[in-house]
Length: 372
Image 1 (cartoon, rainbow, N blue to C red):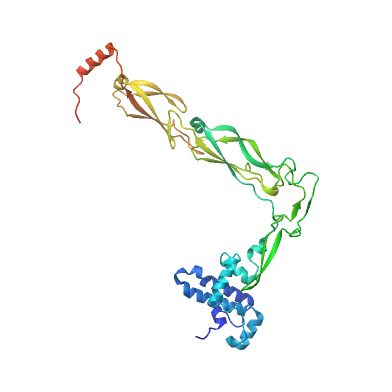
Image 2 (cartoon, rainbow, N blue to C red):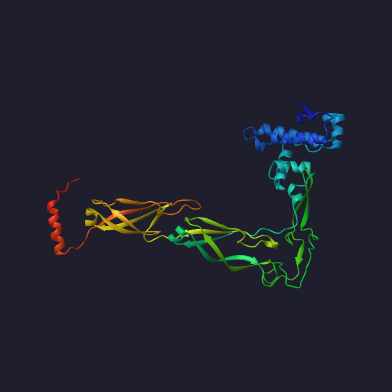
């Protein structure tokens, strides 16, 4: 089958400028790249190879002139991009770190220098790491909020060298490997021509300088670990798993960078009497049979102090009494939940003779029990 006209493949006229050809190929390559056509991969590969071959010729002034004069019958025009050559080209893209469409375009449009090579810079100050601290508090503290002082291990600037990583009075020297650039170049030959990658210098780690005499305290890192005392405000309403962020209280950054953040993870200690359910608190109260039968006023304990509760006459075991607004506050909001009290009736295990006589007299006045 005769080859299609390269200009027709890219959809440009014969007097198209290099920029027009480049723009057209970018559009075609995105449209037909096999990774974007998983359901029609074979046809997409063929179209992608065809567009790439056309761009390979028309983007080169000498090859384009030969093609304009001789057509497809002209002199050898470079890579075939068919069969094995196309697979080898894709393998080369993968081998040299091309991860997606933009990287492939960068290869063609920047004459073989991958995007990462043009952006690699000398190591700069870096932000410090974030750290976490688990804080255990009581349910009462979670309800009212509290101010606490903790001791957290973190990385801080070395007090001996001031963060320089050098012994005081010593200097740095230019890295002999990268000559102060912080980068080293690696040249390789591939199917697509000479390929240059730029990587961080392994000797100086991108700083461009070598410390002659590292600080004996921080061993050249500029940071040391210490246990810092930090004051924190725990807001009312926190629960298990709540995270409080203290900006700038994490590890100090390498090379003089800003500090990371400290995250306080809340763990609320289980309460011996109360059970929390969101904003609500649940508890139990035990009363005697006469109180349940005759009614009574009893004092119950809440997170906010003691409250007097009225037990209506004839209260049955398991009855739940609601105390509005006596639960947990809403975190960073308004209002509180409720406090629920479940009534339990105490059945005495031992009776005095007088108590027994009284209960027997009461039993005589009650109707017989009903079976289930």
